Image (cartoon, rainbow, N blue to C red):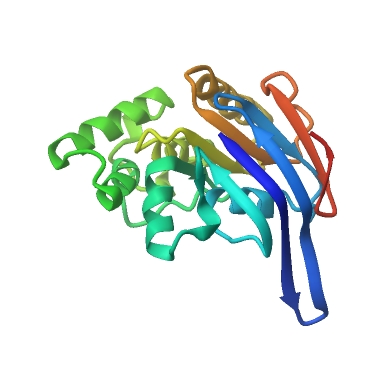
Length: 222
């Protein structure tokens, strides 16, 4: 599903060049639930951004489901991402003026992957699946953090992507809600979705198939 060959990423900063990733080689099989573990600033988010095509490597190649994404134009990359990747952010990133169901419908509207008349039904089905169907017509501000994260997960599944990436998805949640969110990701992997989460949480061993540790932009354990 995912192959990174000699991937490095260097950013220009006021203090000079900063190497966020250093010569990363990594393969992840379809249907795996992988936890990328490391301290803040270790390179976890940068690694996820490379796989999602949100950012491009300074050198090396990133292939996802057979497509080398670093060579795609911005328009083709956006279209590819809409079909193939669901991204769950730490701070939910729900649009505040849209209801929960409208937030979930948004990726379908962009990619036109679902015919118009079926989008709301599919969105509500996904919200039901993650346990917040009763809140479909509520605005994000009226929902708890855990409920907003469930809506964000439903949105990530809108186009049935083969790959779901999550950046610190439980970082702002209480321990009980965090466990429930991790169980949702486990269920997704059991259904055949490849799931990769970046986290500093220690309590992921019970749900993941594989643990990858990163420190100062280098893989320590893969």
